[in-house]
Image 1 (cartoon, rainbow, N blue to C red):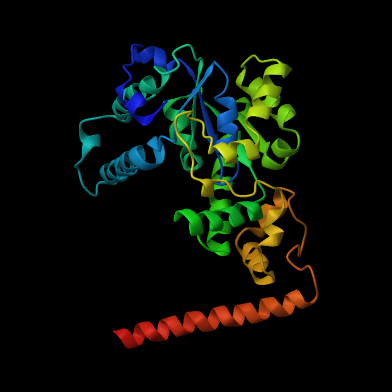
Image 2: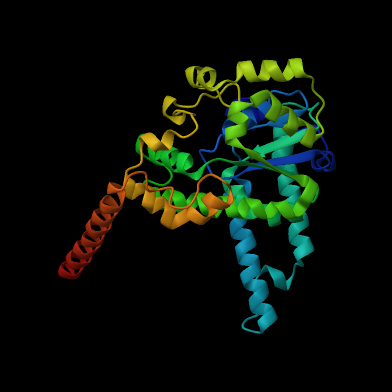
Length: 325
């Protein structure tokens, strides 16, 4: 399903039929294995997926934000202008559903027999309430990975591909923000499934079977074993494989894929920086104990030196800023 093929596909399915499909959203922090899971699920005949559509975070979020601002202003008597004057929120929701039906209908036209529409976008974690409002039967799969491995991968991606966060502190904060947001979907009870990357990596077939069972998509163990063998990390890395057969990911997209590889990358000060930003969540999820960041007695000294150097750097930047005025 190439970009050109997708753009030229004619959706012969009525809009209402598109929205009647089972919608599935993979959410969580980036670099958590979401593309891997998406690719395996998309290998089923009943699951239709595409590139990350970025619909809710890039296209619809300005509509949500502006509507809320203007509706609040009207309610509070601060001003009386904007779309809420002539449309109710239900009107806006109907308009957006029509938009979603057209977009997802174009995707579904590439695999019209599919019963499930899968959209993977980590930033959708911030929009689970909006997704639920517009697609009230949607299911959410939250792929959770040790935040330290996520941070190490984020930094590597920033260096090699130029996107995302470039420091341990910023990466830890982003991991915490997205994981906490994604976990709010747990309030949807049987429409929310939390999957650990570590378990998916160690027992891929068993974990994948649980996901298909959650989606109510029938498949046997032989089919799952084939999916696993065709989508191993090294296989995907060698082929640059993505969830869309005609598209290849750059080599830099694939890093190590190993559990605990952060130990090879973080200094003592960087471990402390992660702890400051996201330590409580790391422990809540069972990934670390108290003072995990101290591996040797000398680490405390290294952290003190690092904090002093960091403070000196901030002071220097402020002084240069003052002198430049």
